[in-house]
Length: 234
Image (tube, rainbow, N blue to C red; front, side, top):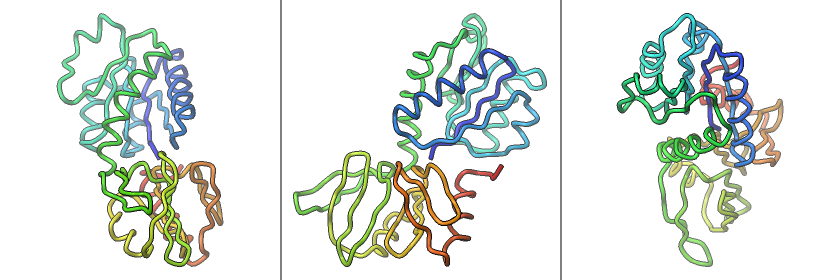
């Protein structure tokens, strides 16, 4: 799950940014949530740990410098994208705080370009590569690319962005190896990557279009972990 914040008081730029970001992520089959704000004070109150934040220089109650500063107070890992007129962008000291820039008027192709660039660094911070031994050989697998792992007897099936991979072992051992990489066990047979959870309902999760049941005994803990991962519950 990618959490994105958009701070813009521009009636044209804000909605266009949200639409362009949404289109790109859906076409890329990436689970996401977008929080849009038109006031700096609302952005501050959210205190969410965003993966990516788009900061428009048109913010009536907050300077762009303050918006960048606040974002860094909440999280040093958030990727920041500045949005402004081309001549204004040259006035800002981008430095290491800023991952990329977008010039107005915003074009969908430019948003896609920026997201391709920024998403790579987001993926890099969300996991690590490890060797997975399968009956067909060794696979180099990135933890962030795993949708979920399911077990049947001693057979493990990894469902990933690269396809499905079969191996053998215990789910408990895999859970320990993936600890710290946003995985939750929603029942005795499934270990789910919260990064790819599209929605949570009373008794199931939707992960990459697949419905996965939540055990009644685990519902409260799964819900809490998912909310903590997103940063807030609206």
